[in-house]
Amino acid sequence: MRPPATPVRPAGAILTIDLAALRANYRLLRERLGGAECGAVVKANAYGLGVEHVAPALRREGCRTFFVAHLSEGVRLREVLGPDPTIYVLNGLHPGAEAECAELGLLPVLNSDRQVAAWRHLASTLGRCLPAALQVDSGMARLGMSRPEIEALSRDPSLLDGIEVRLAMSHLARADEPGEPANAAQLKAFEALSALLPKARRALANSSGIFLGGSYHFDLARPGAALYGINPQPGRDNPMRPVVRIQARVIQTRIVEPGEGIGYGHRMVAPHRMKAATISLGYADGWHRCADSAAWFDSVRLPFAGRVSMDSIVLDASAAPHLEAGDLVEMIGGDQSLDDVARQAGTIGYEVLTSLGTRFQRIFLDD
Ligand SMILES: *Cc1c(COP(=O)(O)O)cnc(C)c1O
Image (cartoon, rainbow, N blue to C red; front, side, top):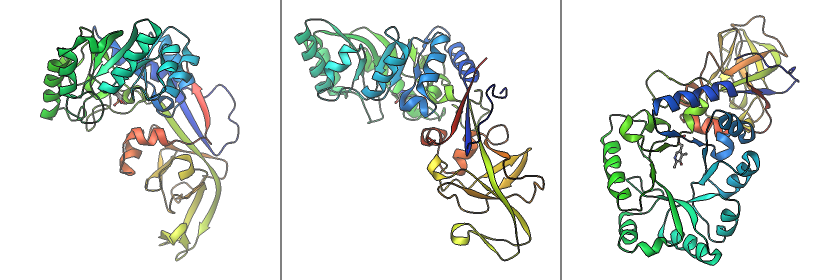
């Protein structure tokens, strides 16, 4: 990553988002997809990174189809991107939200026969055809229509009157486990169920699904995580470029004598004379309390000594004699990846990103 063009204002912690890396990740996924279209999932404020920067960057790369989870996210994204791109709302239609959805040209992912009926009803009221996606549950039991619901639609096509089915989609439960037979089973179920629906484009793969091979690509893919640098193939080399860097500022350093307790609960009692450094980052910034991790300074590892508190963490900085107040240490970056931090916290990169708080100074890089 290039250094930021704007001077760094003193802030507790800095979150740098590399939009050039994001765009390179989009291109890499598009290449892997061969002929299929590469959409982008930008739900949850683009996985916490800032949809008003992320979505236009992807748009410039040629992305035409976006996915959000909530109608409110679709409303925001429409403001950001204007009228052209296709925006699907994954969590479907809430009762009463149909008119706003249609007015803004947002396409609901219809997940149940009730949602289909509500959309059909609105189409008939408006006297025009309304586009939508239909989601089928191919074996995750989360969202999407069941086999009996699909069969009912297939027996009585008038249930879809006024609905233009643009996309038939489903979601994989175990795409990040390539050897898992559940993937092939879902693929088969999706092919069978989508064949019962009106002819439409089809979409199955999330980030990891793209790496399961061409038979999972269909017409359109829905990557999220991999765009943001999360490894779509856990346990193997990450083909994606890192997008996120987090640095925290040292607020204070001190010498701790042997036997002195450090941090809440005296998590550590100094076994010998130590240098401690307190940094300005804590669980209120989304750094999970259970993420017992380390910071890095000049590629030297500085393990956490105290517990993660709300606004600060005490590091064992004995290995960095020159570290002083005002310096920045790296929390996510070249020496410690997003996925490393997630593993240390017993979670996944998705949760680390979407937890990041509002106090960071956010810097967006691009070339
Ligand atoms: C969140 C989501 C995605 C994106 O998944 P990633 O693993 O982040 O690529 C794709 N499809 C659906 C239905 C989702 O809910």
